[in-house]
Length: 538
Ligand code: NAD
Image (cartoon, rainbow, N blue to C red):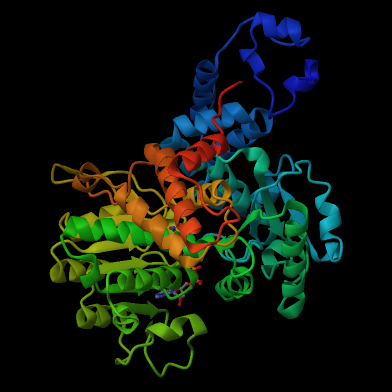
């Protein structure tokens, strides 16, 4: 290795910091550059945890961890993986919401790649400035719908950075393959534009054809530079989410995590919930509060899942009901978007409670960004109509959840099978402990990404998300279900991602969406091994 001395200590992807042995120090010209004492990786991890826990609040912990990522990648990923339940909420939702809001204030070092309208016709050229030449996963946002927090413009950069850290932590995709992109086409958030510290492109958002042309140029540039890199679209406003997905999905290896990742993770939770409630999945009636990209994405995949259980398309659609800000989504409403149309059933235009009373769903899924919308009346009615009501409050961050875990259990006398988008602590109720599952997309997208890379997939058809959902549901144990958890523990995440990756790659071979004809199981496992980054010093 040619890098030595102070350069190796300062290279975040190479440094072992105080973990260099005396022999290493001699060989690499490090004598005098380090304190005498030697720490191995686990001692360094302990120091990180002690320092992190001393920080007063979560945003300080976020800043601390982000600085560690800049200094020593191996230690950052090692600590995150070993302490995933503690660290994940700090590097992703809910803390990342605050980090995005305060992006301009807490900015320390540039991370990721920024594209603005001033880069038109030069995107491929400026991508040469990115130091890594073998990018294989790109996460891109335009910052217009960050979590449930609205248009945060360039402040949304925390999202692609966080998601890509999760690719590495949860599935072992090497950080050098990961490119976070802020597609900064301005913001309609006037408060941000007026902030003198705001770092984004300080104009109103680009729209219409100009927006699409710039995105076309970006996608083409990624393909030109990095061949078949996976592109994940993240936190776009719903109409753009669908527009972009439909524009590229048949030609480019890409997916939209809010639509498809959310769908797979929610479907898996509902499958596990149906098992716990002892109701056959094919008999479910499912009601959504919210009819945006998250809810509709889940609905679309649920419909496919019901069809795969033998229902006709019409039967499957008739099981899925949506309520939005204007009430039940029904035939004849003139304010619906194209993605709502398959679910606009012939029915009276009812309010939320009346709709629950009429349709009698066993499953209620909230994806509104509107906190408190699962009221006591709503939860009680679900519990009146079902022995084990399945209730998902998916809106992020925690402050936006439709109800809390405590409320769901309390108002249903402990009978609800509850999951949320952001984590909730276990709840103690009448001497029973309930462990709410987190319908975290991180259960799904890293595994899909790993499967796409290992299987050299060229496209990600919808069926692969169904494969991922079924695989995740199969990872939920009887023990998990006994505590009311509809997802496996996060500590199992690498095993879960690995299983998802293997099944997604196999399904991709079967569907002919791989540049390989197929791999045997042994070859596939070997390929997955070689793709998996283990954060230890080598
Ligand atoms: P969106 O803006 O496209 O859709 C929001 C929908 O909620 C709209 O249909 C709107 O009419 C409806 N709505 C808003 N307020 C309402 C109210 N008071 N009563 C009834 N309906 C109401 O947003 P989206 O992209 O679909 O995301 C929605 C939420 O889902 C966000 O908070 C996001 O954080 C969450 N989400 C969670 C996950 C996850 O946990 N895995 C993944 C993706 C999105």
